[in-house]
Amino acid sequence: MPPSRFRPGLGRPSAPAPGIAWFAFRGDELLVRAPPDGGDRFDVPVAADLADLGVVAVRDQPLGELDGRPCRSAELAQGAPAPEGHAYVSLRRLHGRIDPELFDVAGTAYQVQHWDRAHQYCAACGAELEAGQDERVKRCVRCASNYFPRITPATIVLVEDGPRVLMTRQARFPAGMYGLVAGFVEPGETLEACVAREVHEETGVDVADIAYFGSQPWPFPHQIMVGFTARYAGGELRVDTRELEDARWFHRDALPLLPPPLSIARKLVDAWLARAAR
Ligand SMILES: [Zn+2]
Image 1: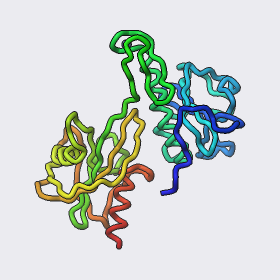
Image 2 (image 1 turned 135 degrees about the vertical axis):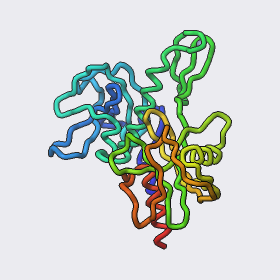
Image 3 (image 1 turned 45 degrees about the vertical axis):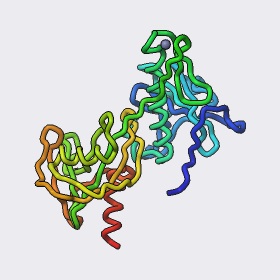
């Protein structure tokens, strides 16, 4: 994997920059520069101040630097107009239609502005919160309660049985697409226990050899997906129809429509296929 071009940080820019890359949200939609050729690749606006573009930020936060350029997240008012040559596009729709590194920063920005908006006052005593100087935290000016950004862990697992892989389908998926078993971690649970529980609950299957694969922030709205592989160890396939529309074993030579590239589900499947091909 190439090194990330993004360096997170809360400080001032390390060098004078011609402008700031703005990751400005109106609700769930990011302000983007429309492609000049009418194509499908979006970019984010660069300006010293958002006001230069004719939009007003309700509040904004530092994110760090991308390719040496400072980046900030911003929250815009509902109903804010799109400047000439710009548009508002939901983060989900931008997946695969913007530089992946920009998408990752946009995901970070979305979570930061969401947290910033939701943490203006202390939940314990109602006093105002102020932003920490050296770390991403809001601190109560009266009772010193801390509010860190909320990050919700979920596991996702590729279960293999020789040449077969266990795949699941939710009703909201595009027609014909299958993904992998996934679910949220419960209080007191290890990630491995979460994997075993989710697979059993959703499909009735037992697994062994649970191994870490990699992880991916998933800003809808604040998950981190932790990917695992596991081996089939018994149990009869039965679908939990409260959560799933379908679950099946697929042979590697007859796979269904897969999740989109860049998703960790797809990376898990691609890595499994690459291992099988060796
Ligand atoms: Zn307080």
